Length: 252
Image 1 (cartoon, rainbow, N blue to C red):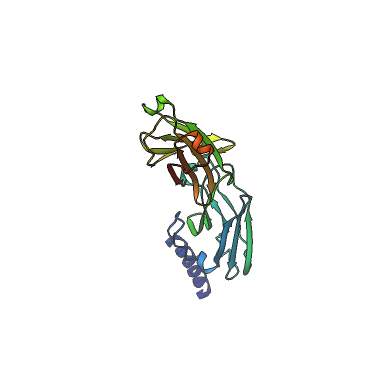
Image 2: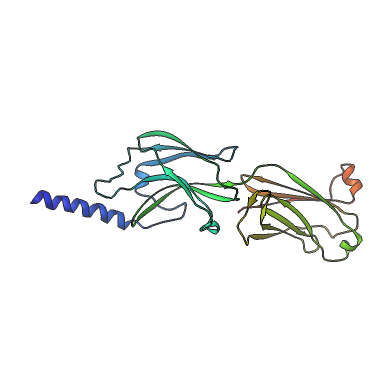
């Protein structure tokens, strides 16, 4: 009889522990159960877009936790919330054996955004997430340059300069002194619908003949846009110092 009572008490204790832990989504969330078993050593984006995860299992994962509830431990990434419902997150089972392990996550799809690389357990009413690292996913680091010469009409009216990179286009307003990035599908890559972000850019007052050079490129820091303004196309060709040179970074 006492053995039977002890057995039921053990099962009740296990489920009480599971229910008491609040479900979390944030990368910085508390993860009391996973922390007992798993430690992230390093997480990095490879040059081909895949993600390398080095981790250590501090002890063998007891997936049954002494009861009848089986709880898998997984490692992977979640897309930004703006993509939820449109893109599927990626998770695979961790190596449950004690010791050091390496996981290579395949290159995600052709969508730009910051991924949350993390470990999680998810079974019935029990959810827990251990944050790892945020990785910015982007096409490549190729620099793309466009040019624009101010006409007499431009110098006296409200006008815009347009340029583009994979998944976005840029809209610059020299008179309004701002630059905007707008998401779209372009060159095989996409950014979520409705994205647009403006930043102040202190352009010089437009004058006929001013020559604009805009260069954009992706990096681990985000999408970088550099704008140079020369007094003329001739000054640009002669490699003279631009009268304006500013770089802005946009993170998604």
